[in-house]
Length: 316
Image (cartoon, rainbow, N blue to C red):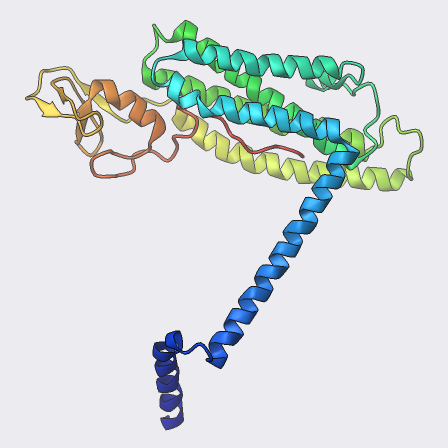
C-alpha cells in the first residue's frame, strides 16, 4: 500500500513539475513517440498523394471529369438552402440549370461509350474491364443524379411555391432527395454486376469465380438496401405527417420573435408551448428539429427539407 501510494505521489509530482523540466525522460519519450506517429501519418499521406498523381496521369481525363462534376455538385448544394427556403428559387434556377448542362455535355462527350444507357439499366457500349472504371462510372452516375434532382427541386419550387406552404415545400424537397438517394443506391449495382460477371470481356475468368463474386456482391448490396429501406420507411412515414407546430390565428399580445427579433402578433406554437412568428416557423422547422427557445427536440428528422442534398458519393 505504501509503495503504491509513493508511486502515485511520484506521478502526481511529475505531472506538476515536468512542464518546466525540458530534460524529463517521460516527456521526451512521449514527444518522441508523438513525432514518430506523426511522421508515419505524413508518410501514408505522401504515398496516397503519389498514388493519386499516378491515377491522374493514367486516367487524367476521367479524373478531371469526375472532379468537375463533383465540384459542380458542391457549388449547387452551397446555394440550395439559401435560395430555395428564403424564397428566391428563380435565382437558384440558373445555377441548377448550369449544373444540368454540365451533366448533359459530359454524357455527350462520352456518347460513344454509351454510359447514358445505364440510366435505362442497359450495359454501355464497351465492357467494364477494370475496377477503376467501375468506380469512375459509378461516381459520374451519382453526381449526374444529384444535379438532375436539384434541378427538379428548383423547377418544383418555381412552379408550386405560390400554392404551397413552406412546410409542404420542405416535405417535397425531402421526398425528392430520398427518391434520389434510392436511385443512387440502385444504379451502381448495374455497373458492378457487369464488372463482376465480366460481361462482354474479350477474355473471361472461370465461371465459378465470376458467379461467386457476383453472388457475394448481390448479397452485400441487398443487406445495405434492406438496412436503408428500413430506416427510410421510418422517416418516410413521419415525413408526410402534420407540421409539429400549430398556428394561432387570434391576435396575441405583441411579442418579439427569437429568430428574426422583430415584433409580431400572429404566432406559431411549438409542442413545448414556445412561440415564434408565423413567417419564421416554416423555414426554421425545415432546417432544425428542435425548439429555438428551449432546444427541445420535437422531430427526429429534418434532413434535406431545406433543399440541400446528400453529398456522399455512392460508388458501389
